[in-house]
Length: 55
Image 1: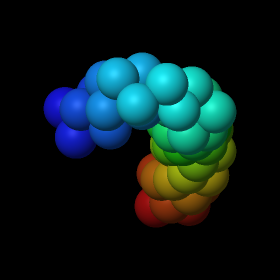
Image 2: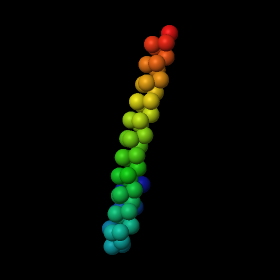
Image 3: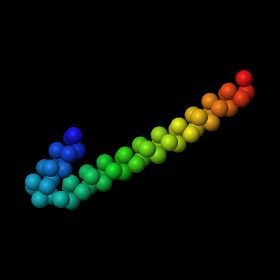
């Protein structure tokens, strides 16, 4: 919601570059969050699988 208001402000001020930077930052942060979540999920899954097989 905060990013949307920033984007609208940028468009209103004809500062499209600033809005584009915020949009790309939001997109990259979402991508990184997904990647980090997937990687950590895989790592924790492997660890828990190993613990299950050991016991």
